[in-house]
Length: 346
Image (cartoon, rainbow, N blue to C red; front, top):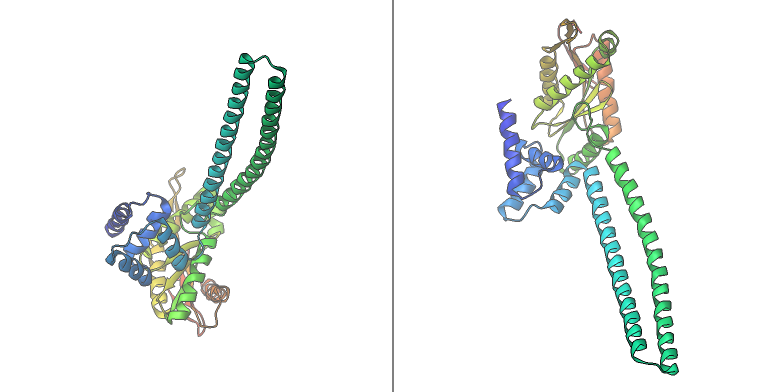
């Protein structure tokens, strides 16, 4: 735990050193660097720092896209940039309109001054013609202004809709604080492509909380949420610097493990399973223990012919074998091998 706190502090220091705003996305980026979860990311940043090149927001955006896939944060930043440009355009329109209005007012003032100094009919006629001409010009400019404002208002409304949509499609699971399925798939697509190109192994762990429905039915959804939070926090702590944990949906969690073959991934899965099995919760209302929490885990290593979907499907099948084998167990893809602990499951 002290190590994690030290890493978090170092990530914060590096973020401030780069003069970046302390946003969650910037912190996440530097935390990945500090924990060395991806040696290629570390190498890319080290190269920039060695050359004393500034690591500004645009650089981070490009690196995030390369190493973690498409980012909704980048989408939101893009929408904000477009909105800012649209606002600048609106400001320009309004400023031009103000200039036109001042010119028109000046023309009217000049006309009033001439009228006050003259009494000739021809002068009056000429002046009225000038005022009529200025009024026509102002009327046409006002019509164009209204049209431009209408178009810009539509653009701003569309950008606001896109921003709301991007926020809705967040990459973070609000309950556990882990990345969600969308974030995991984007991350793993990027990692899988690099795995094929650079010929290094990559594996996934598919985890499922045993008897989760029983927790909900017996103790209520609030206690079920506590179980999910506990497992999520444990996974984040256990794979810090090793992989990318996410909540895949319901009581299922998926962990991406770049640079880990199936044997190394199996060992990590066993450590996770063993650690979770030591955890238990008590009901705050009755102070009664709700029992031991256990995980079943399926492990699969990416093959060169794999898609992300087929890899996860094989890990899911291995998970099913663990469930069928008695739960609180780790299995990996064919040829299936298992380590069965005390089959006692929560």
